[in-house]
Length: 151
Image 1 (tube, rainbow, N blue to C red):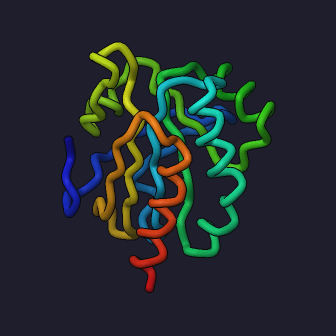
Image 2 (image 1 turned 180 degrees about the vertical axis):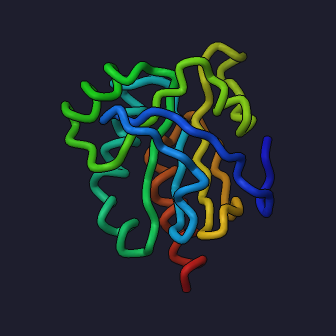
């Protein structure tokens, strides 16, 4: 898996609105980039809703939030609307970005893993949290690390 201190690999994916999201264009703001297994499953819904409920806190700390899974844009649109998510979800349908970020599979390789990266304003990975269980811990721990990073 990627390590803290490395440059975050660049990528371009499509958002729920059909726009292109380019990591290289996000410089100047911190970014919480979280990979999750599947839209509308219990753990993934809890994680997304926790990010939603604390989204303003992340913005106030100078960070944007973006979720990535292999679900389609259409699936992301439904998930976003159903749970009123204020941040973009990106469709990595072929798993290429997940592979570039070296996100491991979980449960004996049966499920895509759940990993959150905190990327600083210069595009450097400052924190990585890897845990399939405890989906809302991703939000809490990443916010703690972001708070420490911005001082």
